[in-house]
Amino acid sequence: MVGPAVNFYENSLLMTKGFQQTAIYILIIVFVLLYLDFRSFSYTIFALIPLLIGLLFLFGIMSLGNIHLNMANFFSIPILIGTGIDYGVHAVHRYKETLSPLIITKSTGSAIILTALTTILGFGSLMIAQHKGVVSLGLIMSIGSFTSFLSSLILLPSVLKHMGKKKDTPQGISEND
Image (tube, rainbow, N blue to C red; front, top):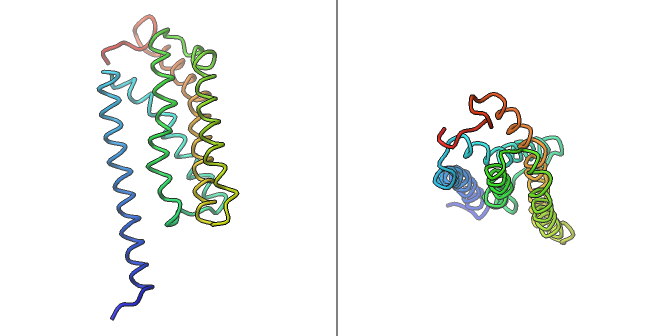
Protein backbone atom coordinates (compact mmCIF):
# COMPACT_ATOMS: atom_id res chain seq x y z
CA MET A 1 0.00 0.00 0.00
CA VAL A 2 1.34 3.39 -1.01
CA GLY A 3 0.39 6.56 0.82
CA PRO A 4 -0.14 10.12 -0.42
CA ALA A 5 3.36 11.21 0.61
CA VAL A 6 5.01 8.54 -1.55
CA ASN A 7 2.68 9.34 -4.45
CA PHE A 8 3.48 13.06 -4.15
CA TYR A 9 7.21 12.35 -4.03
CA GLU A 10 7.13 10.04 -7.06
CA ASN A 11 4.91 12.44 -9.02
CA SER A 12 7.21 15.36 -8.24
CA LEU A 13 10.21 13.36 -9.50
CA LEU A 14 8.35 12.51 -12.70
CA MET A 15 7.28 16.13 -13.19
CA THR A 16 10.81 17.41 -12.58
CA LYS A 17 12.22 14.93 -15.10
CA GLY A 18 9.50 15.90 -17.58
CA PHE A 19 10.29 19.61 -17.26
CA GLN A 20 14.02 18.94 -17.68
CA GLN A 21 13.28 17.02 -20.87
CA THR A 22 10.92 19.77 -22.00
CA ALA A 23 13.62 22.39 -21.48
CA ILE A 24 16.03 20.37 -23.64
CA TYR A 25 13.41 19.90 -26.36
CA ILE A 26 12.54 23.60 -26.27
CA LEU A 27 16.23 24.54 -26.65
CA ILE A 28 16.56 22.22 -29.64
CA ILE A 29 13.40 23.61 -31.27
CA VAL A 30 14.53 27.19 -30.58
CA PHE A 31 17.91 26.42 -32.14
CA VAL A 32 16.30 24.99 -35.27
CA LEU A 33 13.88 27.91 -35.59
CA LEU A 34 16.69 30.42 -35.13
CA TYR A 35 18.76 28.67 -37.76
CA LEU A 36 15.84 28.75 -40.17
CA ASP A 37 15.42 32.46 -39.40
CA PHE A 38 19.07 33.54 -39.64
CA ARG A 39 20.28 30.89 -42.12
CA SER A 40 23.62 31.12 -40.36
CA PHE A 41 25.11 28.96 -37.64
CA SER A 42 27.09 31.92 -36.23
CA TYR A 43 24.10 34.22 -35.96
CA THR A 44 22.09 31.41 -34.38
CA ILE A 45 24.75 30.94 -31.70
CA PHE A 46 25.01 34.70 -31.16
CA ALA A 47 21.24 34.95 -30.66
CA LEU A 48 21.40 32.16 -28.07
CA ILE A 49 24.19 33.81 -26.03
CA PRO A 50 21.98 36.09 -23.88
CA LEU A 51 19.63 33.23 -23.05
CA LEU A 52 22.32 30.66 -22.24
CA ILE A 53 24.53 33.05 -20.27
CA GLY A 54 21.46 34.48 -18.55
CA LEU A 55 20.39 30.98 -17.46
CA LEU A 56 23.93 30.20 -16.33
CA PHE A 57 23.97 33.33 -14.16
CA LEU A 58 20.47 32.54 -12.90
CA PHE A 59 21.56 29.11 -11.68
CA GLY A 60 24.67 30.65 -10.13
CA ILE A 61 22.61 33.25 -8.28
CA MET A 62 20.17 30.56 -7.20
CA SER A 63 23.06 28.52 -5.83
CA LEU A 64 24.55 31.49 -4.00
CA GLY A 65 21.15 32.54 -2.64
CA ASN A 66 20.20 28.99 -1.66
CA ILE A 67 17.15 29.16 -3.94
CA HIS A 68 15.99 25.76 -5.14
CA LEU A 69 13.76 24.66 -7.97
CA ASN A 70 10.55 23.24 -6.57
CA MET A 71 7.12 22.17 -7.70
CA ALA A 72 5.94 25.77 -7.92
CA ASN A 73 8.85 27.43 -9.68
CA PHE A 74 10.33 24.91 -12.10
CA PHE A 75 7.70 26.10 -14.56
CA SER A 76 9.90 29.17 -14.88
CA ILE A 77 12.64 27.49 -16.93
CA PRO A 78 10.61 26.78 -20.11
CA ILE A 79 9.03 30.23 -19.78
CA LEU A 80 12.46 31.85 -19.41
CA ILE A 81 13.67 30.08 -22.52
CA GLY A 82 10.75 31.54 -24.44
CA THR A 83 11.10 35.06 -23.11
CA GLY A 84 14.88 35.11 -22.80
CA ILE A 85 15.54 34.25 -26.42
CA ASP A 86 13.65 37.36 -27.46
CA TYR A 87 16.47 39.73 -26.43
CA GLY A 88 19.12 37.92 -28.45
CA VAL A 89 16.95 37.58 -31.54
CA HIS A 90 16.15 41.29 -31.72
CA ALA A 91 19.75 42.29 -31.02
CA VAL A 92 21.22 40.00 -33.69
CA HIS A 93 18.63 41.06 -36.28
CA ARG A 94 19.55 44.68 -35.62
CA TYR A 95 23.25 43.84 -35.82
CA LYS A 96 22.71 42.15 -39.19
CA GLU A 97 21.16 45.36 -40.54
CA THR A 98 24.10 47.60 -39.64
CA LEU A 99 27.00 45.24 -38.83
CA SER A 100 27.74 47.51 -35.90
CA PRO A 101 27.52 45.97 -32.41
CA LEU A 102 27.12 49.44 -30.90
CA ILE A 103 23.72 49.82 -32.58
CA ILE A 104 22.39 47.18 -30.19
CA THR A 105 22.95 49.40 -27.17
CA LYS A 106 21.91 52.60 -28.95
CA SER A 107 18.64 51.85 -30.73
CA THR A 108 17.52 48.30 -30.04
CA GLY A 109 18.73 48.59 -26.47
CA SER A 110 15.85 50.85 -25.47
CA ALA A 111 13.32 48.34 -26.81
CA ILE A 112 15.11 45.49 -25.02
CA ILE A 113 15.20 47.53 -21.80
CA LEU A 114 11.46 48.26 -21.99
CA THR A 115 10.63 44.63 -22.75
CA ALA A 116 12.86 43.36 -19.94
CA LEU A 117 11.51 45.84 -17.41
CA THR A 118 7.90 45.00 -18.14
CA THR A 119 8.69 41.28 -17.86
CA ILE A 120 10.64 41.78 -14.62
CA LEU A 121 7.92 43.98 -13.12
CA GLY A 122 5.16 41.63 -14.21
CA PHE A 123 6.74 38.53 -12.75
CA GLY A 124 8.25 40.53 -9.88
CA SER A 125 4.76 41.43 -8.75
CA LEU A 126 4.31 37.74 -7.88
CA MET A 127 6.88 38.20 -5.12
CA ILE A 128 4.34 39.97 -2.93
CA ALA A 129 1.99 36.98 -2.97
CA GLN A 130 1.17 35.04 0.18
CA HIS A 131 2.05 31.66 -1.33
CA LYS A 132 5.78 30.89 -1.05
CA GLY A 133 5.77 28.92 -4.30
CA VAL A 134 4.34 31.85 -6.24
CA VAL A 135 6.90 34.13 -4.58
CA SER A 136 9.74 31.84 -5.69
CA LEU A 137 8.31 31.69 -9.23
CA GLY A 138 8.30 35.49 -9.39
CA LEU A 139 11.82 35.65 -7.97
CA ILE A 140 13.29 33.16 -10.44
CA MET A 141 11.50 34.74 -13.40
CA SER A 142 12.68 38.21 -12.39
CA ILE A 143 16.29 37.14 -11.87
CA GLY A 144 16.32 35.09 -15.09
CA SER A 145 14.83 37.91 -17.14
CA PHE A 146 17.32 40.36 -15.65
CA THR A 147 20.36 38.18 -16.31
CA SER A 148 19.29 37.49 -19.91
CA PHE A 149 18.64 41.19 -20.41
CA LEU A 150 22.09 42.15 -19.09
CA SER A 151 23.74 39.52 -21.25
CA SER A 152 22.03 40.91 -24.35
CA LEU A 153 23.09 44.50 -23.70
CA ILE A 154 26.58 43.94 -22.27
CA LEU A 155 27.94 40.58 -23.36
CA LEU A 156 26.38 40.15 -26.81
CA PRO A 157 27.67 43.44 -28.32
CA SER A 158 31.14 42.64 -26.94
CA VAL A 159 31.10 39.16 -28.47
CA LEU A 160 29.87 40.51 -31.81
CA LYS A 161 32.57 43.19 -31.81
CA HIS A 162 35.28 40.67 -30.95
CA MET A 163 34.06 38.08 -33.46
CA GLY A 164 33.73 40.77 -36.12
CA LYS A 165 37.46 41.51 -35.82
CA LYS A 166 38.47 37.84 -35.97
CA LYS A 167 36.64 36.91 -39.16
CA ASP A 168 38.15 37.33 -42.62
CA THR A 169 35.36 39.41 -44.12
CA PRO A 170 35.65 43.20 -43.94
CA GLN A 171 32.68 43.58 -41.62
CA GLY A 172 33.34 40.42 -39.63
CA ILE A 173 30.60 37.87 -39.98
CA SER A 174 29.53 36.58 -43.36
CA GLU A 175 25.96 35.63 -44.16
CA ASN A 176 26.79 32.05 -45.13
CA ASP A 177 28.82 30.72 -42.21
